[in-house]
Length: 359
Image 1 (cartoon, rainbow, N blue to C red):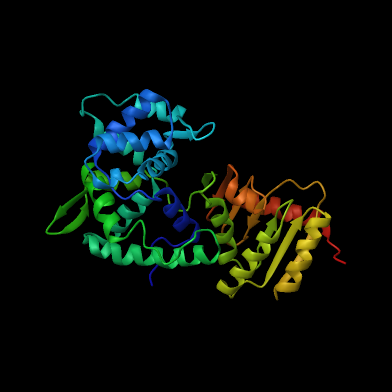
Image 2 (cartoon, one colour):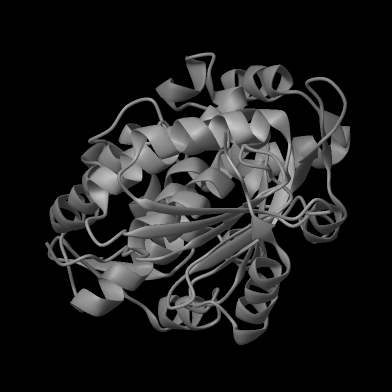
């Protein structure tokens, strides 16, 4: 298989940022944006009731769309989480939404700005650009086929519940979401059943997030992109370094699964704090894995980094605990190619740490 998405982290980013969203029509979406802008603070239930009342799409009547569209607007940066079940319009969202008027005069430009960094759409358009012209079913076969490959791995790692999933590049979502969205924004044209990028489409991907650029990640309960970023580093590495003040059985499960997927993985340098709980988990890890584990400690450790000197790295606020990776609001930076400055920082953390004695 020729990989288009190419990395576990990018597949997780596509999966989580498009989760549950399966359709698009500009009229409903613009009404939703104006509704959110008027309310300023909104709940998923309120979004769901609004969609039921205003959209003609049958999927808007399911009762689940409020949750999915709230998460979409969160990923697009229009909303940020507030207290309880509330979301509020972000400063960025206020700036974008203020440009929307009741007339549709500039709606395409406004929508293009809103979706300019939405990674599932960027990958969809890049695939069409690489192919020249392509049928929707070919997108489903290739991009959907690759998502099945990556979601199977994400499922094995416990990052998502079900694997072998083509979404969002299955037949229904491609034809109900990506094609109408791209046509509406003038990013593609369709002739004789084939899609081709327009000039605006080529400019759109040209000015989107550059490939191999560092990426700021923010997560919330239900979005496990930092967890996937850590797994991505280990999935491709031979001798990675893991730095985390606190660990638990999550690390053992992660390493046990990764070693079955990455035959090149031979050694892990682990830098933690020297605590009774951490030593217990390291002891169990040493018992269950055939890998060479160089366990070390630095008692004032605060950094959280997983690094492959010759590949990708991720630094974040999340410890290698399930509470941090799945239940907390966390922030981090993913580097497709580890910068020299980060390599030096990791090397220094290893050099100032001491071997951890396990009894």
